[in-house]
Picture 1 (cartoon, rainbow, N blue to C red):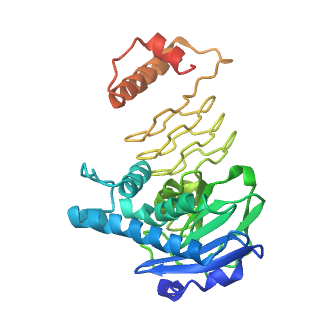
Picture 2 (cartoon, rainbow, N blue to C red):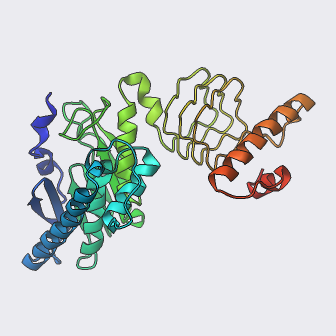
Picture 3 (cartoon, rainbow, N blue to C red):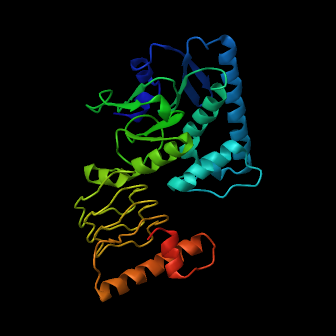
Length: 330
């Protein structure tokens, strides 16, 4: 089905909370559905939202005039010194996810408007093309719309009030007009930072071109004890992944992002970590295992390599390996 068929966002009528008052806000390309608790709704609140959105768009448009490539780049950009806060938030999220800054625009706008609105109401929900800012005092269930997929509107994400304010962002290769290089019907990311959730959703959805690619976008997934031997995880987003005691023999991790991943006790023989991002990774050291002298030698070579990488990235002095091991809890 043509992605343009969803431009009118008819899905919005399918899942509106009955205790909220909803209104739409449309300014140029921006098309937001905003819900606030009924006691807080007023015409002046709508006017406030409109004025805030106009201001955010104005800052973004002015900056794009200064740096036109900000609008079209598909990779992170170095900003000009005069970049406003909304631009900086987009660029920061994009840099983490490895995508162009406009991949985070909807989430960033939702978040900025939501934070402003939260000062004037008890609860608010802002949906901007599938990217949601949620601030709630009760449990909410956010339905996942996936176009013609048989799972569309049959799956919901349960959000407790303690988790909010929170971002829930969806990227799709089949629904909506946004650019995607993947074929996922709906890939959903939730995070405290809505801009980051938006950018990471885009990056993860870009990876999914067929069913075999689904594993590449499982951010934060628990693979403890799983046999992933010979898996192709090239370019995979495995931030915060738990790979404890996993069989990772001969896994292709080239260009993968393993930031904060836990590989303790895993088997990594034959793995290819070429150009993988390994910041804050927990390395596969099994403290209950007796290592042979050759294994110790190989392990320390790998640890020294990682120590040098960390120190180079942080522009810090290369400290003795023993101190580095203690500092990182190894």
